[in-house]
Length: 376
Image (tube, rainbow, N blue to C red; front, side, top):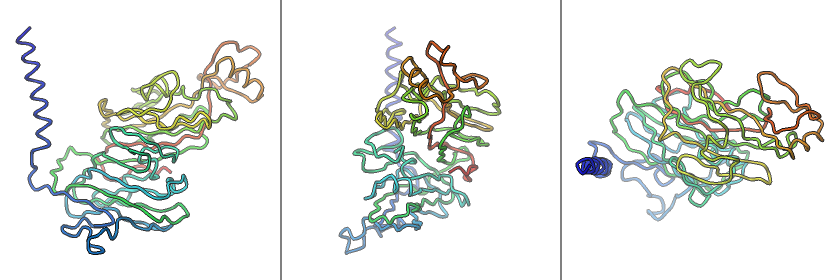
């Protein structure tokens, strides 16, 4: 037993040393660069030269209809390590009116295309204070992304102002390294925004439409504006997340047990932020929710194709049943066929099909720099 404990201690010490080495080891030829409004191109020795080096250009004016390149590299490999930004107008119109796009290795279509707020895990275009493994907003006023984004030859990160308004102050920083060794197994980062308002009865919402290729699904943040007019305040989140892998057709390989279950909680969901799962908005007054799940410790790999969906299924208890009866609109039970609830005969609790306003941003790595999707 004593020898076994000593062996465990040796393994633990070895793991700590191995992790520490990544901090103090110097990779050959790798250079650090930042871009910001003080050094648009990340050029050596040219940061902060405006106004004699006394904070002459910390931000920029972003007019409606403009496209601004936040970072661009050509003829070099590298890894985007961190993106930070903040803006002075954080209204819903601006948060979803500004789009962020990313291009890798000369691709003609963006691998990342999403509204600013949704990409940075701020669902419903509502700023929240949170921190998780990939994103954070320390005081609910900024946007941080820590997902590593490798490239082999070039990269470009840009924003587009489609809000209909001019933005007075846009602050940002893109931190990256140049000269990293990117071997053949390294994948490209992708992100795609989708919205359906309303969803279609009994047709699962597509978090990630079918993508062909080899890669890894990183996870998603999802926003729901629940339809409380048609379904009263009956709980909306009974839908299961389903992940179709490598040729799955009618039924998936991976299947969850409910919406709040997928993000690690149960019996409904309130506001919380954990490392890999959380709910940044749980507004019971408006019946609006924004939540996330990231598959870092539990990787989801695919080798041929992948599709990720979530069902729109509600739960009705006794009080819900009586309220629905008064509405006198058809409510359909879950099942293979659409069967309307007969409220004169329905006695117990039941699950029902529903439609809501759902949006999402899905994150994944793929073996191609080109985006296979065009979803808005």
